[in-house]
Image (tube, rainbow, N blue to C red; front, side, top):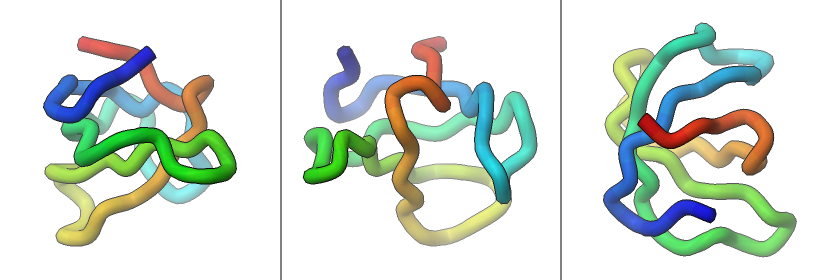
Length: 56
């Protein structure tokens, strides 16, 4: 569904604000989550399920 470098928007996450945008930072990891970088609220890579993200 996503590939490295895709820009995504968070649509559902417990600790992140709706609408924050980041970049897919690599392939899908075990457990089905995607690594997302470039988020404005943090300097580290966070992981999200497919249903928590949408491509922008």
